[in-house]
Image: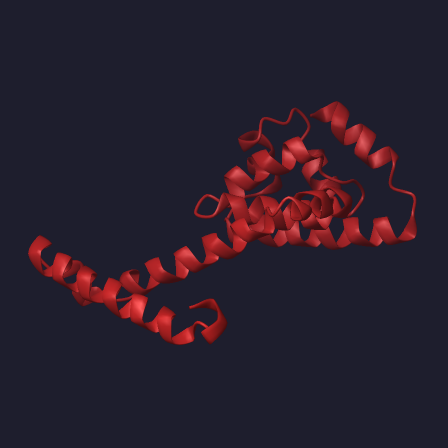
Length: 160
């Protein structure tokens, strides 16, 4: 990874790419700070021998190689590593992101976000966590029917 970092930093010459890397560095810093980690702690967590590499990436001096993006996303995006990896990839490597997007990877973020929102409906309802198994099953069955009905009402006539 350290060698990949060296290669990534040596290629940053184009002004547009340099600006994207600086923006990505800010994103990386916000994500790290939100996770409550220092740069040294993040470097240790992703098994980097030189913690300065994280500081260089956050400072917009170097790009994260994709292999390291995946490891960082696993640490910083513990509750949602796919979205974290996609955000960092989009920021650090727009060309790779375009290729992934062409394969439909962007739909993963959309689907993961939707699933998280549905789960948050449950998480936000304290009373739901006190239901018995039978009561929960009844609420879940009602919710499924209500969801199916709502989706059916939203479908355009051509898609029915």
